[in-house]
Each structure stands twice: as structure tokens, then as C-alpha cells.
Image (cartoon, rainbow, N blue to C red; front, side, top):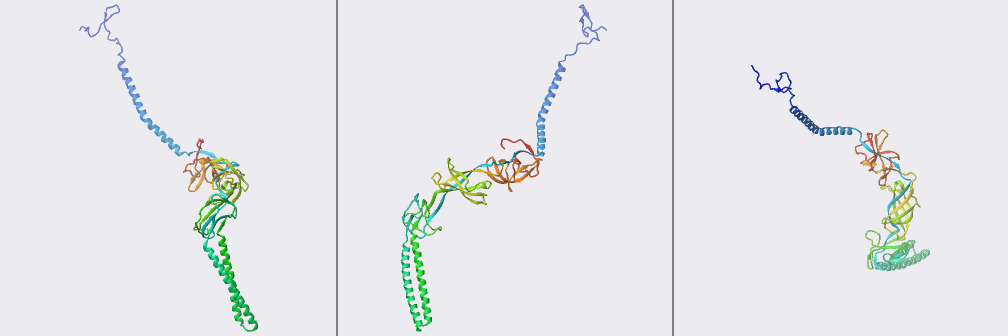
Length: 411
């Protein structure tokens, strides 16, 4: 069989002649285009799937890590900010609100009922002790006075007659004419008549005093700060709820400035302690004064000491004004002060949370003093240098463990 020239391609020889194809000759390698594209596609698909898996699992992984971290933090002792209690200053600038009162004051009442006949003073007038303020018209008392005089005259006449009869009976009894019984009866009548004279005399004196009450006078030097009646007004005597107030008189030559000093500084305020008194709206113009009276005991309700500062009543500060009193005090044993954020309050009362050296805490009840703004006085329970928790959590109990944190600007 002859070979098919088409089955085996003929390649030119080196010399240009035809040469037949050897059956053992290896042909050229297949083109790599198909195999490379497939591999690249597989790599892209794998990378895309990996990316999708990573993107899908990342939130779950983050959430799981957060849960683990939260569980770790919740099981660990809480972090707290720590502050330090300190001793208060030995020189204290104490400013307290107070009320300026007149040195003495009193409402003026009438001792007898009647009508206002004339007014001798008015609002703002200065008077001296004994000056006539008002004159009353009391018609009834005048008639009663006339009647009392008549009764006294009658009693005196009856007493004289009874005495004369008793003397005559005594002479008759001495001569043996009259009886001793008649004499004793007449002497008893004479004694009764003499007693009646004394009674009418006392009643007459009483009515005379009531007549004197028509004139109402000033009990001390002062200024009339209130007038409550006019001429012709009916005045009820006495000092009860139905009585009529005629005037109010105040002695404003000096003023009593009444101020309540807190317990923590009460021992530093004594008679003679200097003070400056000023109006809240004019603090630059202060009036100098000094303590001239103290209550000597604390008020149980407020734990304060009532102090009176004496200042001149020159008019710079008026009686009844709301003022501010400032003391410069030297304190021998100043109270401990704590940061305001260290204070905690429960139904048992105020307390602080003390940090111990082993990072455990102790709840300590305290007695509060003055509020100094960023600091508060602790009169009992805390000593200077002790570590306290700032803004302590409500759930902390004595013996709990904590972790210290750095202070922040809020504490």
C-alpha cells in the first residue's frame, strides 16, 4: 500500500527538497491559553468566596469578642476614681445671711377703751420716753369717777356716824346703863363702815388711774414706724387679738443683726468678735460691728448658734433689712473637708465610701457641716488623708473589691 501523501505532511528539507515527517518526531506543545484562563478563574472564585466568608463572619467574631470582654469586665472589680479627705483651713472667711432688727421695738396699745381725741405724733416722728403720743376720750370713766367720789363721801359719812354711836354706847356701858352686847354690835357696824370707806377710796383710785390712761406716752426713745389709728377711731383696750394697736415704736439708735452660726464654727464666735455687715446689693459699703450677745447653746433643730451683732443705726442699713454678715475666724481644730462628689446619701443618712489599703471599701456614715461648693465639711466619720471613692456606685457594700482609676476633670 502506498502512503497517502495527505496523511503525512511533507516539510521541505534543509536543502529545499521534500522530506517526510518522522512518526517519532514530537510536535510543538499545545497553546497555554485555555489552561491559564481556567486557573485564573478558579483563583478569582476562591478569593471571592473567602472574602465573602470573612465579611460575613467578621461581625460575629467582633460581637463574640465584645461579649467575652464584657463578661471579663463584669466579673472583675469595678473601676473607681479616688479622692482624698483633707483638713479645713485654720483661717475661715465666714459669710452668712442675717436679719437686721431694731435694738428694741414694741407695739403701743391703750389701757382703756375710748375714742381717739387727738394724735400728737405721726409716722417717722422721733420721740423721747414719756412723750405724749395720743389722747383718748373716755366718757364712761368720767361718770364712773363722779359716782365713785359720791360713794366715798357716803361711806365716810356712814363711818363717822357709826363711830360716834359706838363711842356713846361705850360711855353708857361704862355708867352701867347700856349693855355690853349693844356696844359690841355698834363697834362691828363702825368697823364695817370704816372698811367701806377704804373700799370706795380704792375704787376711786382705780378710776383715777384709768383716767390717766387717756394719755398714751412713749415707753422709750425711738421712732414711730407705724400709725394704725385716726382721730375719732374707737380703741379697744388690752393686748389680745381684739385690742387696737395705736403705734409701733422702734429704737434704731443701734441695730441687732441676728445671725445663725453653724455648729462647726460656733466655738470660734465669741462676744467681742468683729464682723462686717453689708447689703447683698451693695457689698462694697460694709458697716463694722461686733458680737455683743450669743445664745450660749445650739438650736436643736438647725444645730446653729444664734448670735447678735451690734451695729450703729446710721441709716446705711435699715431695720428689717436682709443683710450679709462676714466673720474672719481663727479655727483651732478645723473640720475635715471632703470632695463634694464623694458624698452619698441613702435612707440611713449621708455617708462616704472609704478605700482601704487592700482595695476593699468601707461605708462610713458622716455628719455634714457647711457646703463649700466643691467641698463639704464632714464633722464626724472622716479624718484628713483618708482615701474616698468619687461618685461611688449605689450597689457597693462594705468589703467589696474595687480597682483604682485615674481621676478625671469632673472630680
